[in-house]
Image (tube, rainbow, N blue to C red; front, side, top):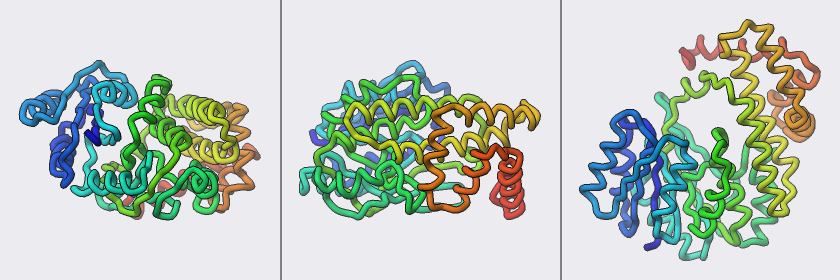
Length: 345
């Protein structure tokens, strides 16, 4: 069997049928589908069991809640395919995704094949693209073209390779080892912590310029949600990524600084705007303590001269000069404008 598709499922009963049906409707049929219920409290577990009873190529599993990484690890234990594709239970696939990506893998003898994505919000949709040219890359070309911008492209202010696991088929021999060594406590950036080491381990990759994968995103709720542990999660992601890169002998210090600095900026924005339990002064003090952590301080300092986006540079400058009230006013002003335009509730 060439392909195993693994879907972690957690409380997504509203969208789960669309996800599973889009997989069953693939033009390529020689796959197994492993559905892993990660301790759902809604009807998701019953839904995957129904599919498991109806289709011989579907396996339904149940486990205590532990997050998507543990669910993926549980699924890969049962997988038999040479390649692994992950999907999330509230997303869906174009019907030719599996066939075209496996055809490219066979044609170019690729360890990893990746496509673009469509981000599907309530009132909009837009492409998430890999910023590396379409085509096949051997190890030499990967070192020349892909690795220098993989984690962060200074020209575009974003990763050149989408960190998601869901737009990639990856040889099981590569991704299984990585999953088995991922820190279970990671709760932010877990896809990046698998995707980027997998690319470093691969001898060949192929990039397809087609948005086969549909990523469902409630932009308003994600943008305005508050997680009191987000800043500590970002610090843990920094440490884990650095460890993975160092272990493979790749110096990605500058890219990692920019990647983490951008993540930290979003954490700071949410702390300032949405931590309603604390008055503004205490929120500012919490941010000040956070940005004085050497990992965040160094990431922002190292990024100031490398990132070309003027708006981001301005925010970094306000942080490094400790003008945090001005940064708050900048964030707050933008929220007001977006509400007036109808993009925020």
